Length: 174
Image 1 (cartoon, rainbow, N blue to C red):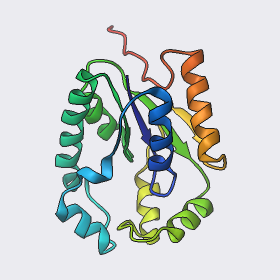
Image 2: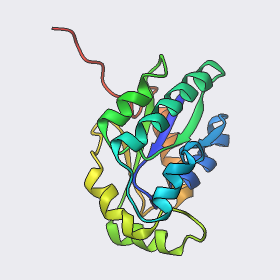
Image 3: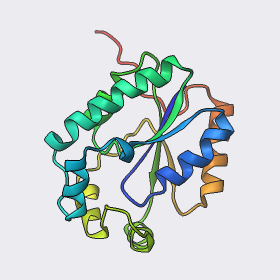
C-alpha cells in the first residue's frame, strides 16, 4: 500500500506521516528531502516553484513510489497541490494511491509556519500554495484542527472501514 499525506505547507504532512507509518507498518519518506538544491534555494529566497521546477522532483518521487510499492509500500508526505502532480505521482505505481488531504484554515497554517525553525518554506509563500491547490474530491480529507494523534487515528479507522479509502475512482471506458 502506498499512501500520500498531502496539503499545503504547514498542514502537518510530515508529522502525521511519521506517526502514521509505524501504525501501518510502512516506512515514511518526506517529499521535501527529494527537492533539488536549486529548488530549495529558490524557496529559501521566497520564490514559489513553477510547474517546470517541480517536474523533475515529481518524476523522481514517482520512480521512488514504484520502488517503495515493490518493496511493500510506504507513506510519503508530499504537497501534491495539483491534479497533474497527483497524476504524475500515480504513474509510478501499479495500485491506486491512498490520498490523505490535510486541510485547514489559513490562519492556523500561517501560525504553524511561523513557529517552525530552520525550514526553507517561508510563511509568505503560503498564498501561492493556496492559489495553486486543487482540492482532490476523492481524497480522505481531514481537518488540521485535530491533533496529529487524532488525525492518525482517523486514518487508521478509515483504513479499517474501507480498503479503498482515499483512492481515485477508476475512469470507466465509454
